[in-house]
Each structure stands twice: as C-alpha cells, then as structure tokens.
Image (cartoon, rainbow, N blue to C red; front, top):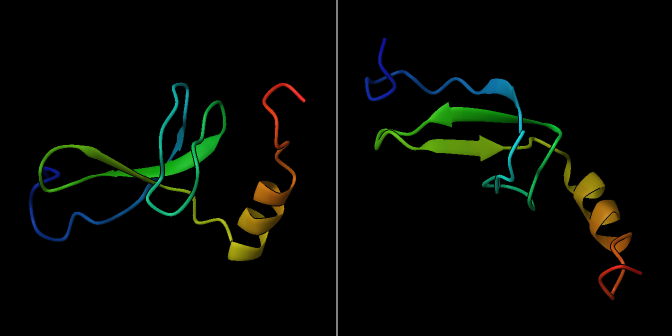
Amino acid sequence: MRGNEPGRKIWSQWYAWHPVLPLDDTIYWLETVYRRESPDGFWQYRSFRPECERIQDLASLPLCPGA
C-alpha cells in the first residue's frame, strides 16, 4: 500500500536523528517521535505527548540560550 492511498493513516514510531517539528509539539531531535506519510508524499510528525508534559517541558526551558 502506498502512502497516498486512502486508509494510510497509521503513525509509526521513529527515532528523530535529525531535527523535526511535530504537528502537536515543539522541535524533536535525537528522541522518539511518530511519523506518517501525507497524501502529498511528505512526512508528518507527532509526539502524542500529553498537554501537561508539554507545559512542564516548556516551563523548564531557560530564558537565555546557554543558561
């Protein structure tokens, strides 16, 4: 089954060995994310991380880069 056929909506676990921007989260790099091929033939990424975990992670980011 090709990625552009109807019904191809399954997300597969994938290790982000290069930076990717999930549809539902901030940038992921060198960690596990989920991906699927869009009807246009491009990869789409999702983290499926709960909202409370996203908020905690954003709150722990330093205000100044390198801090």
